[in-house]
Length: 358
Image 1 (cartoon, rainbow, N blue to C red):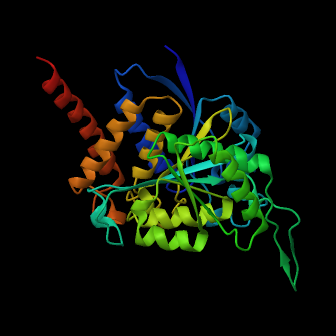
Image 2 (image 1 turned 45 degrees about the vertical axis):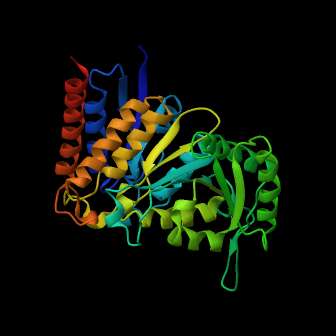
């Protein structure tokens, strides 16, 4: 049996707290399940700046490249605002070096989560946003800032659009076979290119229903009728904004995981939220986003959907039992939520044995 290598980047502020919770759940769910792994904890972000004046040390990068998956908790915070290289610079470089061009953020609101949503949810919501991650306006050149004007450049080429589109269509094939391209093709040249390339890729997936939406209309639809979506494909800037909006309708950013992947090499799994300096050390950080990130890792990098589903079911059972941190209106601690999820994993297995062994 192969022993998988998992690089662990705990990061800053609440990062180590929620990573500890995630690894506890990973140990519990993998026990006696023929899943052997080893973790390597590596300096990254602000903590790496403190240790070696670099948010992404070369040894950390090399270890990530040689791993089967990378887990990241959270980086950054006011302590390093004046650093020569801020923690976020390390994150952008890591994504670039690992060629992680597709960022996947799920939005799922089942019955146990409906009451926490700030909007009226009466139907099951389950969609993913596939965001292009390594190009667009965040990376475009030229860029310039002076006292009188500023310039940012949005740039895309056919290959960049095609490869992330293929990821999205393949994902749609495994889901409800519906893909929506979100763009601004009425005014942006890059969006016109996106639409042309994606229409070509769509022809390779005739089973997938393909449509498109302007980004402003999509933003309204996510609030008004989120159940209509399955897979949303979009460029970097629009995806950054829409995925945070989508996360908010679940009731808490503290429950949303993400995956960043490329054509080869390890994928990166992380919560979508930041390092939350204001609650660090208080024991109230929601660990669910990190725990779900580990479930995504099990499902996508290691093809252990069985273990991932155990985690998801245990999370929703804990929420139904009102064991939750303050972001979901509860008064439980990070540790109490973690232990509740582990308890539900163990009890779920006991119930399975009881019902299936005669």
